[in-house]
Length: 335
Image (cartoon, rainbow, N blue to C red; front, side, top):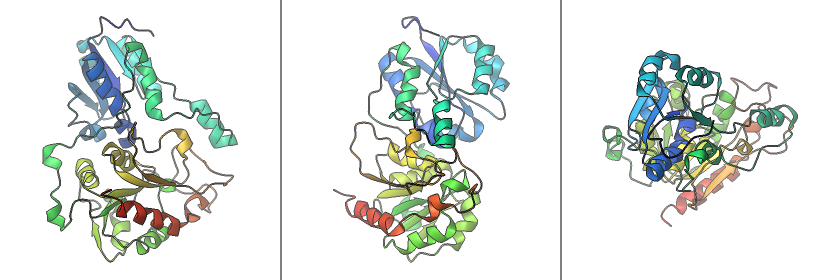
């Protein structure tokens, strides 16, 4: 639906999950506020609300537990001039119908992703998801300022490094988990990688990574898995020299802080448009992929285990190469 630019004063942004996807909407939020000075409301799932709690560009933050329709009455009372749908699924369609307000969305490219996953036919545009998100606000007269992502850490969640005997920019943060197992390095490969890194490392992850982290060994390691909330983990990343991570939300958080990243890709591929995004800033990063596999990508999201049982997309990574790039980026941290 097209929008008449002039009368729009209050808008609602829809993006329900997950960590990385929400962080990737931050340039749209900023540009809507700075270029149009709109009153911005945002709707997200309860479990991801804290990611946006410190964002100064958001005037009202709404969240729901199970279904967005829980807030129909509250949202209708807001009488939004326009809704920007950056999730674009069946639940947002139902919500848009119920609210009955003008809306816009973005090209999700599900058919193109399906072709790449199932037939290895790449029809996806060479365009980052951030740029595709901006298609949803083009009709509002808003353009990408190319300043990159943003992440705002509430003051209460800033981590004092001295509590863990850490020094700013003197350690490597490592995200050891992912929402789907086929996105993360298995224990044996992760341990092998740690054995190749000489620098101090900090392990990050949630409760489900605690058991794995407790088994890992490294001469100079601080294990914070299960001890921090997402904003505190972001604080550790913001004060690190660089981040090693799979294709996860932590990777995008690191990008928001202009951190160098070493991203290790498994069943997903950067061609989906979700690689580290820095805008116009030139930030060094290394993407490790096992190319030439007939089965990759096997999913646009991930699985609990490799559908073929061999897990070649992770098991065949050259860890010496990854460690070498990690050391190179670490040693240039103050350049």
